[in-house]
Amino acid sequence: MPSPLITFDNVSFHYAVEGESSPAARALSFAVEQGAFVALLGRNGSGKSTAAKLCNGLLTPTAGQVRVGGLDTSLEENLFEIRRRVGMVFQNPDNQIIAAIVEDDVAFGPENLCVAPEEIRRRVDAALAEVGMLEHRLAEPHKLSGGQKQRVAIAGVLAMQNDCIVLDEATAMLDPRGRHDVMDTVLRLNRERGITVLLITHFMEEATQADRVLVMDGGSLALQGTPAEVFAQPEALRAAGLELPAPARLAEALRSVLPSLPSGVLTEEQCAEAIAAALRKGAGA
Image (cartoon, rainbow, N blue to C red):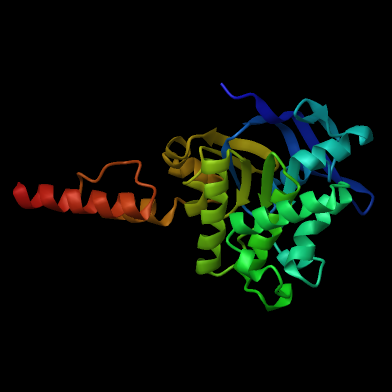
């Protein structure tokens, strides 16, 4: 069994708001194994973005411990190695892209790691090719689409040779095509390169593609399991302020007229196949 890359051990975090302590994470305990694709869901204010920032030391726990590869994120001497291992991609790529040319932005991270120039050149070209942006290496980032900018941000993480990418609502500002392109890239990096992915999202359809789903509510972990296990609990999801993925909602609505529709329908493909099978079964009855 793969060893944990990121471990939360009874982690709590409190923001100071007008002199008072406001809890954003409460007694979180979970692990993200090496090579896994984990989705973290939750309504606005549930604490999921706080959890993301705890993963590489952007925030340190008020109580408990976060470890990355066994390194405690609260110890300053560990932060360089932790951030080398865990890269972040945020919601707005304009806040993350700092250079005037795409390839210069991707080179920024390796340069700060004091990587040799020839190795930086190799890493930049390889990372841009990996996300399908090599032909745009000399482009000005402000002329790119939102999805292309996010792929450049992901390339910047890849060029640092991180073991894990944490995407904090990285598709929230994108149109459907941009979301699709970014998710395709992330899935390929996970499946083909074995890069660990922690995806923080409010899009249920994105979470169906993960190996494991965590649901936060009120700063606590409300549900966890495989996508099939988590989405088999619609009432618990609704209590956490979430809905089933659209294909699952459609199947649920159709079950009154197509009782043979199976449970566990999560994707558009599964829904189409299940409806077709139920209609064939009805026609043959």
